[in-house]
Image (cartoon, rainbow, N blue to C red; front, side, top):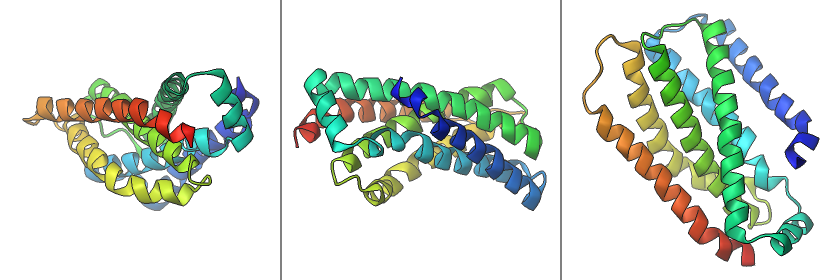
Length: 204
């Protein structure tokens, strides 16, 4: 309900998606497969930063204290994780549709790529929700989230890029099962860390 009251921010992110993909279209028209894939995940990264990071950084100290008096910290962080996963799932689909409309459709396995996009959106939202929760306790320092996030997000982006490459080729590349398991394991680890660490952070 609070997010919907500030829906101008959500519409701003939608405008950001459309304008970013449109500018890419003006610069490179219809890029080749690898470039299309790389640009898609870069757009996804910045969409996630804008959509998910604000969930904590926009909260005032007074409102966080009010939430602290209402619910257990684990319920609060779990609600944030679930909401941001749903939000990023929506924006992931929007980004994919925009890229197909403006940059062409080089996909050979569209449904496979859609599945990878949804999984990637979940992974990015989980990680940045945890980072935003940590940064919110450091005087709302968004720069701290960027500094912490860079070494953590690179392995996930490289993994998503490798997994999604199979959507552009008629032959499925070997080792996909292991990469999916690795991605799922990282998601479980992020959720566990958020549920364990956030109660201690919120006490501060």
